[in-house]
Length: 430
Image 1 (cartoon, rainbow, N blue to C red):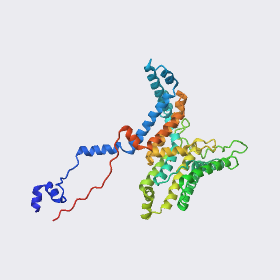
Image 2 (cartoon, one colour):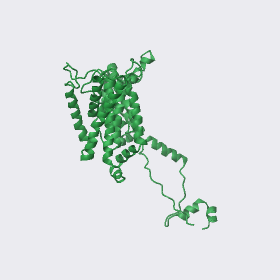
Image 3 (cartoon, rainbow, N blue to C red):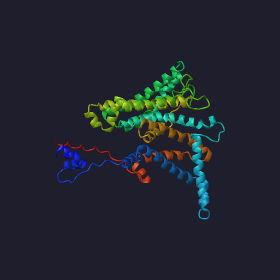
Image 4 (cartoon, helix red, strand yellow):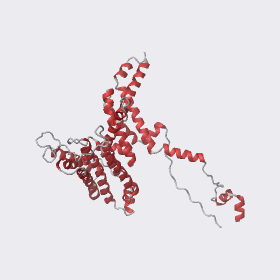
């Protein structure tokens, strides 16, 4: 076939000429515009962000069922449901609507307050609660990206709180310098406590889950003991609590004394940016992600996997240590006890899961859980809803996050398209 014949016959003849023996003619089919849009829409709908949002929605629906089931008016109207079913429906709507309205007013905006600056205070409380959750979530998420399961947040927070708190109440330094030194000491202590886990895994192959659980107990009982000694305890007091932090070491208020939001929130924003840069723009982050995807392949490619494990746990422990510092220098400035972690070390795992181990996803998830914490107390006070309902909602979020096929089945969401490499076209023989 000559070039002139090819040009006159069009692309169909070329494809027919290139067809494999025994196969019919193949025509080049360009994807239609509608097909492209439908594929893009399917990718968006089946993406992680949509699944995370739907997981939260399902958890809130389940929470609404629990709120209605435990409400006295609903239980009473259920006794004569067949006589007046509308009463039960109204009782359910009133209980659920009142509870979630109180949750919103306690976490975002209290529209019952006449002054805007008073009404917006719940949002600042949410951000205050979210500050250590974001820091801890970043630490857990970074370990996740390397293939490590860091559940030692409690121990890393405790040793960081102890180091930062000791400097905060026992040292005399100028304003600003004192806060910076206490911050560095706390983050360093948390990093060392996490680095021990990475070192043991790298040198001995010890499983990080077992080691972190044991180190949680070590940290708790060590800090509990030190709080009963002059090292951390208040002199002349039988209460195992440290002295109050000095004003020069405390995180300053961002919006004045009327609000609880402090400088720790700015530090957490900077930490989120740093973790994003570390994972996505640095060579170390590339090694982290490579080891997280396939340690054996990373080792064959020349990456020192053991060194990556140690470095990852150092960063992870430092970020969880930042959460502990936020507790001491931002929240419990009047003195801290052995429960200063307030369960944040374990809540950080939930935040990291909801954020899909992505820095900005963790940031948003931390604010959401901060809203649950801030609004949960308001919901309990205003509507008498048990605070345990909020814990159940958080637990259900983790359940749905861990089971994407379940969420897809409930909402009939298609599975994401598998990406396949396009076959190369054979060269036309001259």
